[in-house]
Length: 421
Image 1: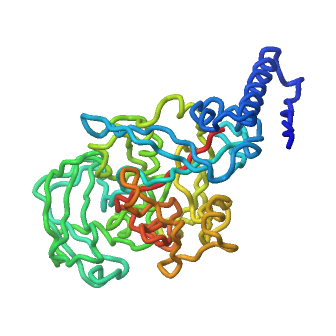
Image 2: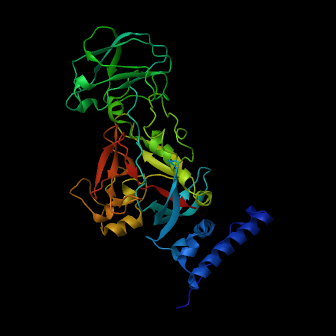
Image 3: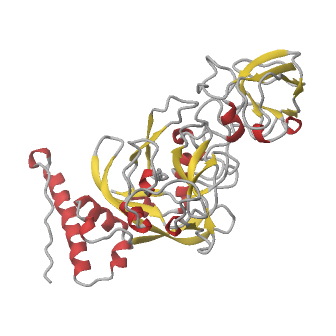
């Protein structure tokens, strides 16, 4: 059967300089040549090996005439976390063909990709946060706190806890601790002080005990708490115990979008933020890719809704090269409109006519994501959707093939997405 090549529609000539029109023609002819080569019988993998050709094809808006949902683009990813870097073939599935919005407001057609395998290792979505930030020096002495609301087995109202510091906390320093507080007996709680929100070495660590003597630091809220200490000195206990589920503030978002070396890809996003455990030993995710591949990926608009417990539930907008899917994009039941339309790949893979439900009663083999280094080892993979009714969980796809949620401080792997555009 004869094939017809649809000629691209040129932009308004009045808006183009002569050199601009010439470049546009060159780019579009290159894209058409790529299409012709494929249709003449060339191996499609030859096109996949040329990132720039794929970008040119994407920009014609005709990529779906040659490529298909589920096709794979395989690129090398190099693990640089050891003295002997190891290279892995990292396949990306084509999950959608759709327009994207860039940071400057430009809209382009794109080829949407998602990693077929889980990343080599996990990174915390968000570390357990600080309890208190010292706006001025906090002198050595005895301090106390209580809880606004009960939570779990061990966080209870009506009990005041005290602790004694033998060393001052400098201005800008943090008090951290109470990790897993609702699930660990008070005898195992610890309070540690740090010189700043980037410090990883404690000034001292003490054990709180019941008692109301000393100076009150206030009441620890379960729900609302702002990003600064201006109006509420003590952080939300959910974020203190198990981390913050806000994508915009997450260590995961920073790691995925950095080429920096270990120790250099993270900066605090608010006063309560704490360095993730992986910062010291793992380089930024983008450091593993070639510059050629990264050059064809767009920094695209990503919309993610905040939780309604510690925040107001409104939308955040970030511009990311790599990002995690949301519930709706993997064809799971959504919590709210506006985070992203479903990707055809997942609807086809699941074989469903309506989105999958949550929890282990909704298992699907297609949801299982296997490790980059071991294709027989299923992994939990993180989504970016916050569990909106709480401050410390994001949704995940579990190794068993179902959608559930996981604490932000868990170092889960992920199957990140990106867009050639």
